[in-house]
Length: 398
Image (cartoon, rainbow, N blue to C red; front, side):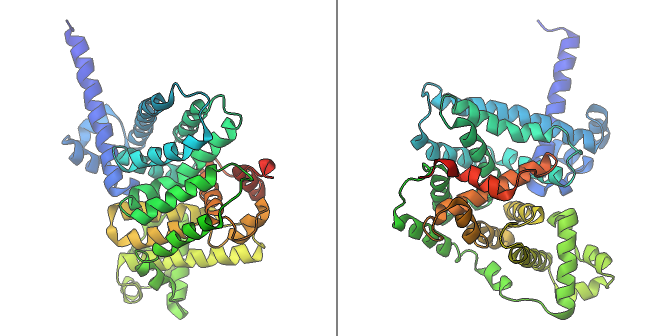
């Protein structure tokens, strides 16, 4: 029989859990920018004062959300590991199906956690010290794969490569899971990541992979039409200001007023050139892509995109989970993974340029995922060519 004190403690725990899960629901629906004590109070059907008393301020609530995600990931990981607990060592041939299933559950029962984790990683990538426990959350998935691959001769590297890959693929899986050609492209890319280094590749496989890339141009049509129009004059200047805002504060911070303040122009002038919020986002995205392409050219391919581009693609995928108008751009960003740098990546890992586009795309996806996680932990340290060769397991290629 529980005592009054014990019952009171239980009610306190339950109330706190209700608040934290309400915050997670709000983040999944509105992004971190839309999470406040007020919006969480509305979701939890409590007063703001009650949340402040039980949890604290917004920063304390965000820290509690991180701890909750770590707890939930531990539970999901144990359940997932249970499916292969008696299979030791885990066969490499099984991994593509397991990785695909791990991502699929993020788009289904794990959708809220998947979005919340992406949002937290993006915040930490801009300000690594704001939530010190985020790196623990990001490391937890790699720990799961390491435990599953215990006894595998290449288990440590594979666990890191898979966790890095899933880091980048996660927001696209959530946003695009209803598109069959995306799911096929994703599975082709996973197999490219996990195929034995140096194994012979059927030329038809690379053609199949690129046919999926081409097919995804259909749901990407609106984004492609936008990308074909290079702005000039005042509109080009404004696009650069928008790009600067995205780099500094992310896509969620964009508005006609924010662009007006940044550019020194009237909000009505901004609206004349970019009537909708979607127009603002698209112009800034393309400006950042143009910068990336210029960076690649001037660095002779040694710098395949900045952290700003990696964050941007994740932010657009997350926007697409909340607003279908952004699905074309999210689709285009995912299908174009490696488009700008596939020649350089092929050179770094020592394969003919168009011989294995699935493998090249897989390397880029894992590289971007590693980059986002590394930024959340304080920054990249390894040279890019070295990371590429490690992901591709070049030392074991024949």
